[in-house]
Amino acid sequence: MKTLSTEFHTHTSIHFERFHEFAKTILIPPRATLRLLSRIIEPFSGENKNKYWNRLAKKIASFFGVILCTPLAIFTAPIGKTLELVSHLFRPMISYIDNSSNIEVGPKISPSLSREKPLQIRTHNLGFVPNFMSNIGDLRDPEIRAKEVVESINSDLLPPDIIFFQEAFHEDASRILFNGIKEQYPYVVHSIAPQISGFNSGAAIASKYPIENVEYIRLKGMIFPENISPRGVVISTLKTAQGPLKIYSVHTQPLPGKGRADVRLLQLKQIQEKMAADLKKDPNLKQVLVGDLNTSRLTAWGEDNIFPNQQPELPVQKYLNDNFNDLYLNDHDARTGKRNNEKQPKFLLSDNRRIGVDGLAEPSGSWYVGPFNKKGFVMKIKIKIDRMLNHFAKPQKVVSTNKTVWGTPEWRALQPANTARFDYILVPKHHNLTGEVEIRRIVPSKKAESAPTDHLPVDGRIWIP
Image (cartoon, rainbow, N blue to C red; front, side, top):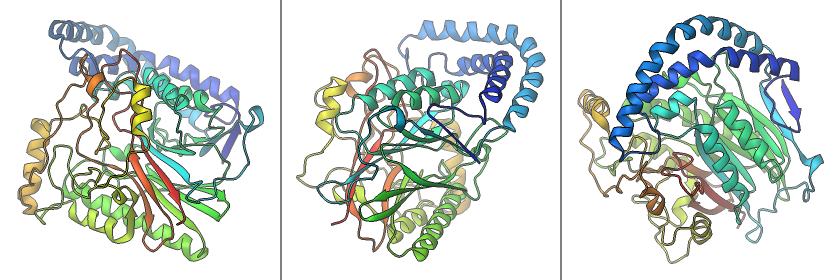
């Protein structure tokens, strides 16, 4: 079941959507309490890192706020959740925006997939999580960040033809985003596989061209707490001059460790088997795999995830290498991610001009230096125990990490990315598709001390040679 509308809607009728909004109003006290609790941990997400006394005062105020709000939260939470559960019964499996009737659109066909007219694809993890999770993750309010993403996309002089988003969980931020870009991207798929928990798959698509068909398959084996959201494979079909093109958008199991790496491998095999089955049905089908795969040759801390050979991520990286062509590696070094030829980046100069900062280097990782930049005590212990139990060698640090300026006035002039590249644009081995991929940036507001998203957008240009 799906709904079709010219605007962002989450329910099968406006009446059920209003009922849902009423339930959200009842839930304001418990959600405010959670947000205040998170501010005790991170009082100013994405800013004010240099202002110790301001941060301390905010923590103390948040503590007393929790004490005052908790009684009301306990009273309203069961009422609001019950109403929310009822409204959930009237949510479609997939929601679809078609705004093409309200704007002047081009030919209803995708580019020809030629070298001269390639298809430009973007994958971008937004980090639009609930407010209290944004605070803990050191990300600013998702609704504020959504407005910055809208402005960045609409001002792009070299915009993609189709964008695949991950972590579009926050309903109000998603509404701001998709209503804000629907003039340029009139075809939007959103709110895929909503759950009673309030989470959906987090996947969404914004396209300049009609999407012929959308299919969703839930990924296997997801570990708590990520299994609260139904992460899956979202398969969209575009009509091109060269025939149908299926694009598989995914968001696999995150975080380091053997158990989670094993799940990533299981999920990649699930995806590859689905792609092979689709190709068997139509041998002329073109296929592309995009998304946040949560695997990287280098860790976020500059360590090699493959060498020495006793590393938990090695089987995952090997499987990717054996079954897919990583288009980023056509122009970049496999280990460091640095550009390895004389070709100039296509988007870097334009992005720097829009940001208003000269001299920013091309990022080699797709995650900003900032949220979770340091391992922290718990992560260090977890990794050490995992290494001891599974007899893994200590990873080798091969590149130095950039300075942490997230949440300070210095951030805007530097905007450093870390060493992990989690976000990919891949084509299956032996396919006649090729292309080039570049990691880009989202333009923040002029006074921002951190980025609108923790991941950087990754753009690829795809063609048939």
